[in-house]
Image (cartoon, rainbow, N blue to C red; front, side, top):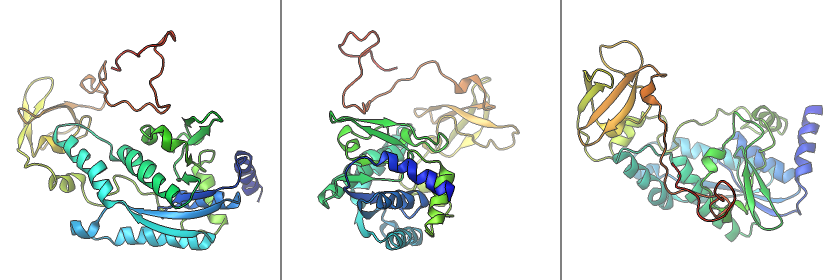
Length: 325
């Protein structure tokens, strides 16, 4: 009881804003369940919104898992006494997230679809949908914090639970959406979230976390992505030190930098140090601490400034910042 009171008092101190209508993205997991629970306890008018982003029927795969997640989300909303609403962003996810993801892999890049999903789906389409439903705020179960200033700007802050912090995945969220966002779990640790769910008798309290890329499911990523890529050509696995051919791979785009890859007939742990799409060559090094896996420079593009504008360069003299490298 003391543990619960401490957690709820801490949440209450953050709840100084007026009571509002909040749409919570409910996935069917424990995190979004507790996010909805906390907002309801703060007295807000809460509605749960479950997003469907992948069409398993069109792909010809088993959609049982997706149906189970939707049913879990509905049961949580029913238990909490809040509304439940389902919305499909399948087409938007395909065009804004999945197609760029596949195109990036085909050209040898390593993309994170969760970053794009947050930017284009959860904190664009979902936020707009929530506001259209009449909500004042859109909330999710992400482990992050947001500070809303009276001047209108909002700052993205790391979560208290450093092990679960998800601000990396939220770094591309536009300022306009961040201003309308709430992260009820930002001040909590995972064990506290599960304890709150158990105390509220939510059936998701002990549910396992979903890991990996949502649309891949339990399939091997290589087997999944191969069907969406251009035909892959086999090529050599070459030792980055000696230039010796170690074996053959089944397609450069099926591997990413730093990935551990098995080399038939050889012991030790081998990793992808470099890829050459022109010659279909993977350059390999042995050992996770090999210097070929390190670099002194980094070139970035499409920078997303959370504040809405680039920061001042060192010295604070104004003007455009130097190129990010």
